[in-house]
Image (tube, rainbow, N blue to C red):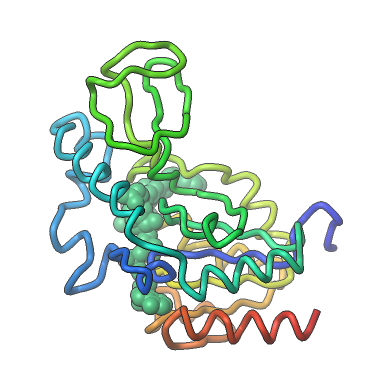
Length: 237
Ligand code: BJW
């Protein structure tokens, strides 16, 4: 049964929602990050330990790029839906950019945020909007040598999984937007939602790796499909 504390609708977003804003996805065969960098080098704790300078640079460049991009119609439509639904909608993003927030939405960043640093000495996470390296000091414990991007790498536990799981097992509807279904646990969210009878919808340029698990599909660019779906959803509230 739907509790008053749990959202009716859970939306998961991935790199595809920010692609039309000019941020590369990971697995695009032409421009994806993984065409230029090996994930084991830049997105694992072992890669960071082996060559930290490469990893700082990878994230410094991507953080700086946020100044040159802006939210697109899909981010804006989701923010409009959240305004109407309030806490009956939970938006979970795998993205580390800040485009949902800049469109006016409040979202759960399960893979962390580019604009936050995490101190490995004291565990503090704090906003850090500019470049940083090992030479920079933590703003809480003041030690240097411990700052890392506050993002979730392979082999690490994504953030707020308990809150996400509770929402998934209790929601009435689950919608995945612009995500390949190649990375777990996010790729398994559709099964969690289905387990308790939620209806499921995938919005993507093309079928994802887990497309067959969804009840409904809308194929096309997020900037077109998401506003259409949001308008239909608003009309049915
Ligand atoms: C459009 C569009 C447009 C384009 N409009 N659409 C074997 C089996 C199963 C699991 C594992 C396994 N071996 C290891 C694992 C676990 C591992 C994993 O899944 N590995 C896979 C490679 C198999 N996962 C982990 O390690 C995770 N942690 C974990 O599992 O902890 C244990 C645990 C236990 C129990 C419960 C919970 C946890 C951590 C994963 C961390 C991922 N980190 C990254 C980097 C984050 C920082 C950064 O940004 O640099 O997260 S990797 C990268 O992939 C990033 C993304 O968030 C993530 C997903 O990518 P996404 O968003 O789907 O992008 P793409 O590029 O893949 O797809 C884009 C999609 O958009 C495509 O479908 C396009 O068609 C579409 N698109 N333009 C609409 N205009």
